[in-house]
Each structure stands twice: as C-alpha cells, then as structure tokens.
Image (cartoon, rainbow, N blue to C red; front, side):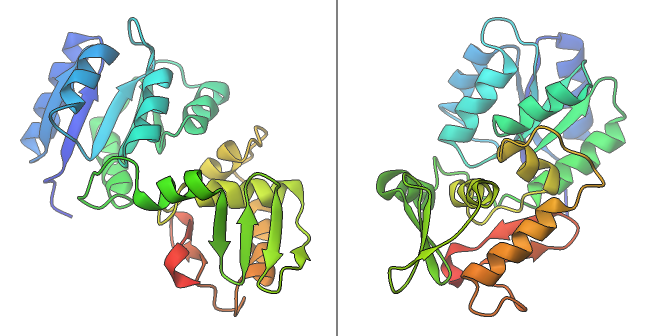
Length: 242
C-alpha cells in the first residue's frame, strides 16, 4: 500500500507534533497537526483525514472525549497515543471508539505499521456518520441474515416472527456489529466494545460466540456471509450480504 493517506496529528507537545509530521510527510502522507481538541475540531470542519493520531492527555478537552466525538460524527480511523500503557487506559480508549492504541515512547516504524493496518479498514471516503449507521439509530431494528435484531428490546427474531434465543453477551456482540457495519473489528475491540473488560489475549470465547450466532443468523453457517472472518484482523458485519 503506498503511503498516500491523510493523517491528523493531535498532540499538545510541539516536538512530538513536529517529529510525527516530518516522519509521515517524508513517507508520502498528507499530514496536518493541532495541539488541542478545539483546534482539531476547527481543522476537521474544513479538511477530513482518513486517520487521526490522538494523544490522550490533551489540555482542555481530553483525547478520550475527542475520540468519542470523532467516532460518533465521522467514519475515520483513530489511533490513541498516550504515555500510559496499562490495560485500563487501552480498554477505555477502545471503548470510546479507537481502532488501535500506542503507548509512548514508541518506534516510528511500529507507528507506521499500525497506521497502515488501520487504513486497510477505512476506504478513502470519509463522509460524516455512515448512512447505514444513521438508519440503525433511526429504526433501532437491524437485519442480520435470516433474523432481525431489535436494539431496544434486545430481541432477535426470525423471518416468521418467532423469537430466536440469544444470551446477553451475544446481544452485545450483535449490537457492536450493528453500530459498525462493514468495519473489521479485532477480538480485543470486540471484548472492549461489548463491555467485557477482562480481556485476555489467549481468550477465544469471542470465536465461540461468533460460531453460535452464525448458526442462528447465517443461511449457511459453514460459509458465513453476514458475520465474516477477516483474516489477520478479526470479524466484520456485512449488512448487504444477508
């Protein structure tokens, strides 16, 4: 993948802003930078990047609040950057909508690799909240293959109107997918976004839940089209495949 994407760097440290801007610009990225949430919002009003490198510890509006606003308003990649690298900070960042998390100090080559990974999840189109997501919020009923999920009642219904039993954790997974259509999500993201804070990298319970859900919603669970496996990344909900 050629490095031709657009990136917004949001960090209150001018030395870090200059370093990241120079490095990414040298690799062909279209880079702009801001030092706080207010200037970042102003910049976004006139220019839309594909990925935002966002420091957690910003003056005024913190990075987590800004990340939440970005995720609710735009379809772009978010990489949180922070001097704190413990699990709680990482999970909170993912819960508010970040795609990845990088702790300072970091190797610039690792940053570039993570940036490329996030860019693969987002096409060049960076429109405000996707039309599919607006529909989800307006109707609160989402089609999943052979079934329809009601986000208000937490009920999964088959085409004949009969209720399909699902557990609370299965509902939370479907909710996460419904709010992020056509976007590959890693297991770590799914754990965090489904409000399961006790994530263990060796835990494969997500795979088990996905397999159970496929048996309930997929026309052919052995060849899933609605809840797809994205090799090397995780899973993705494809709403148009049902």
